[in-house]
Length: 349
Image 1 (cartoon, one colour):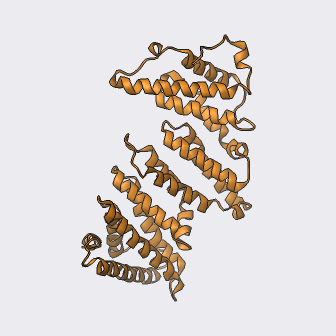
Image 2 (tube, rainbow, N blue to C red):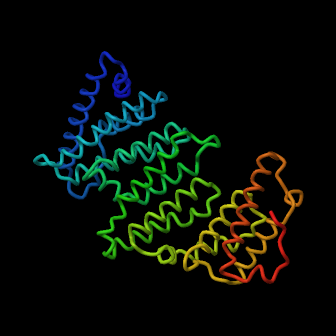
Image 3 (cartoon, rainbow, N blue to C red):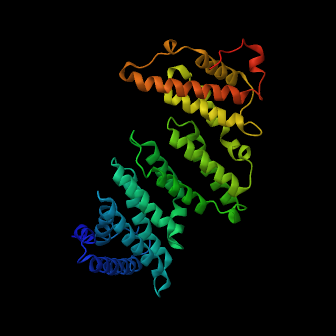
């Protein structure tokens, strides 16, 4: 029945009435849920009522509609519902913690949508997170309280993108940046807890610099740049606590044994670390071994590199990208090492 009411939003003759009904119905459910929560026996774990669960389960139905104009209309209505819920805590006998319980239940539906296989449902879940992050007061508080889950969920969307990239993929990165700006408050960074949260935040994005997916690498670098700007700390200082884990994961894997996309990701991550001032990597045997491998790829003819037979055209494109990544790494390493002075002149590419 509730799914049918959301569908009625798109019918011109009853759309306005349907919107008013949904908002009024939602408010009645939320008020009932708060009263139910207040009468709960102390020590008993709070659980949503069947009525609230049914209503919240209908929200993804509206957000994930196949027709964009219908989904946009549902998004506007759901934004109003979330706003109505948040302002309820200003009423008498409406404790913020009881409102927060409902908001977290709603956020669970949005993050679950992001993990679905369909891009339409992933995009709908991303829009739901955007609604929460754009709702002042308790809405942003809910996002801050589960920020690490939200970061991983949004990164999962980028990692799980179909080969033909959707047009609104930039919206996912935009929501990721919005959440990061909300959670990284420069005024709060002096406390020990805020410092630890910043370290954890960096630990989520730093490993993604070696992702096989270019979009993920770009998003991770953008988020690191934002944290550097908001915290006022150098990039090297922010990344240093995670350096050993990151570099060990790269140095212990022989590049040639990995798919081209993973090789490119690892090479780009090392290049990023070398390019920092001061460099995050040390001049040691592991780095030299990786530079030798990169030089081998840069100098090798296409025929010398084994391409999986299942997709020769894509394999050749990845070889070009791999060779470019290797040259970029070797160029970035020149100020750090005397690597080239001890080697024959490489082939001009």
